[in-house]
Length: 356
Ligand SMILES: [Mn+2]
Image (cartoon, rainbow, N blue to C red; front, side, top):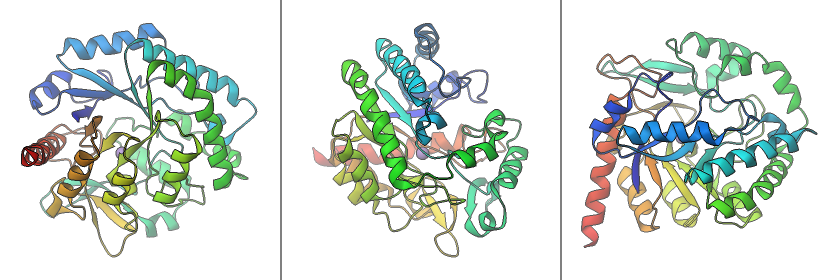
């Protein structure tokens, strides 16, 4: 595995590549061209300059998160082929630049949902949190406004203002789309992009829905093992794979993380590792420290099962708490993600050395 950290680019991120380099445990960067809208082509030149910047800082561009899939593709609208063509051109340019891991999601309207970006914990740190009761009380527009006011001057991925201005239109677009239709739209997209993925050895890694149940009545198809298996089986190509995100997939306590990892051997191309603490039942959770004892997940068994399936892709510590008065995009401060990376590397080293 390669330990990585997500980075949004010099213009948007409060954390610098030079700081990430000094984390030492982290050798790879997961990034994106943040300003690109879904459906836009990423030029080879733009990709190369992004890559050079990372390499000049002594780091390795380990993968893209994300090349966003347009709503036309997700909803299967009449103009989806145009967006799929643009996606294929982007993949081609990424392949030519020797980039082989691409994360994406297929969630209608919202990339992820939280009700709080700064829930204060007993020790004074703050974390992102979700409470279903609150979601049930507010509509999507009110949720968007409260998240927007809470972003600390940053722009959260998936919550870009231009996109959210169209929220009513987006809900209309998905009005008649059920899970089966969404699966079939995903298959259509994957069938179209697999040839370019084969040509350039690009691993597509779909991100689980976050949280792993339907929010605001929207369909969800990347939320439990049966659905993951359906995705894997409907396009039987190793380049059609999964981003195994413990903090998203694990929101549903019925999902067995370790079992799922072992069943998806060869098809997990990227891993996001974080821990969750559940309060008052499963539909109120917060993003805890990575340490097993601070949350619900057994990080040792998760890392061990990734190790045992021969996982060689990038891992990132995913979100962290906000600690030591850091001001950063919620979930994406340097300090706690660095602690998370160190902890996960420690587990991995112990697992590897035990095998010898
Ligand atoms: Mn994730």
